[in-house]
Length: 626
Image (cartoon, rainbow, N blue to C red; front, side, top):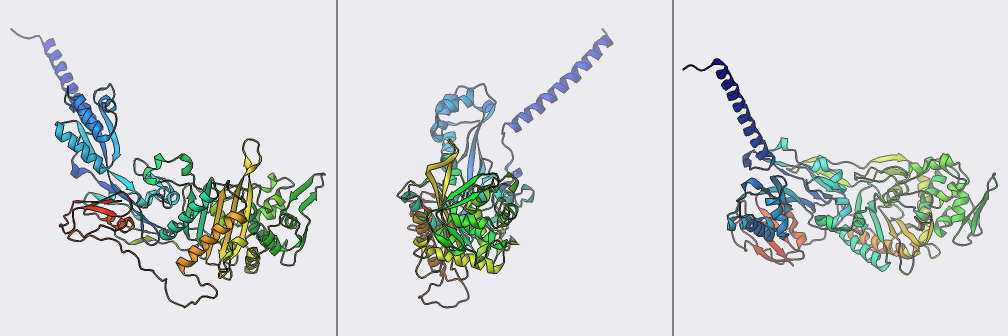
């Protein structure tokens, strides 16, 4: 019996459709497995390790470590045992059982994460749970994580990374492309990012943060900013913003602690700004060392339109010159001095000091502050700017503008980057100090520097910053704060600030601090910020060996190093690390052949492996501190 040819054609068409449908189903299944995190060959994966961050002396501030993602592929989970598996996983992760069970049995996607970026200890607990219950469908993937060994030290400058190990703040964000490893450049399945060395000195940073925390507490203040800078290079050697946070756990911190009070937060500077307003007027030729003004307790000026402008002073100072204006912080003298130049010239010169623009200090999100254009000024803006109001600045701008006074009239760019090296230690970039522009003549800068030195006299507002055996040029300030509710100056909120350049004859260091909304015994910069700056200057002078008057000194060719605790090392056999402080252990985190886990803070209490045991490649060393 013959088959009709029409049926043969039908069978052929159906066969082709079946083959196409089968191929489509197979392809879909492969794509689903790939998207759902099905295991891939380890040999095909590239391990990327983000570059570390160090201070200028090579002390470790940020380094990659192994973390783990825990995921589930629902089709592979044994049916009927989901509840048992969820109990075991929840116990290992320390989460609610219902949450895990929902991922295994719910109506959501087949693939989902149970936890992300957990520690090695937690991953081991999950692995044990998988083995003990015969669980399937659960996967552990090693991912790069970030550890900050010094915890909150210089947190705002160092910054932090997100879940994908990309920089979100601070140096982590500013140098993200440098620190990130390039998978295309991998060798042996591993790719390393470059190393970033910052200009700060971690030792000095720790000392100044300790002083700053005390000042914050003693003055019941809301926040504090402190910048310490090398006057001749622009290198920032300490960068303090309080309150701060631990970048290891930045999500647990109050969001207000994330605010960078050094480079991002902008505010009215108050009387410290008179250093730059008087410097601007002198550079413009409006005033010089012979200029005199009379202060009877206020500045008064009647405009052509009939407006009477009155600016109160702190006292009746009589006849004042530039030195007395800075010594007494005379508002009236500064305001009268501003009448000697035009608004457009005054604005342009203030801009030359770096105000109203980003400083370019290799920082992410740096604020330019606010300096309105002259066409937007009122009749009282020029004298008001001269005393440090009607403009917004950052602590970084206030410190870096002082390089003009310290370097004979030349503005230097502030720097937070010391150098960049590759994974083998070869230097890729080592930027030199950058002279931005000449702002004033050397004689004019020296005149302002000398006038600032008068502020530490008994009659000066900065006398509480005076150090008897160290010449200092100082200016204090107390700024009012706008109340956002009334849009008027608050009766209770102030910013107390002080700047110091020392030694005065040839400044080596610049220190600037601002204490925000102090609620203690005083709110004046001369009373609370000046003594704090004195402590900071003494610390810097002692640490770096600045010659003091009346003390013996000697010339030498390099920096004197005080011996301390050497960095720990591990050779062929485990040394006895017990009793060592955490600071001595951070260098071990750089080892590529073994894993090192540091648990806790303080000093090493116990170690695994024990002293004397052989060191084997791939092993993990656990150091528990207390």
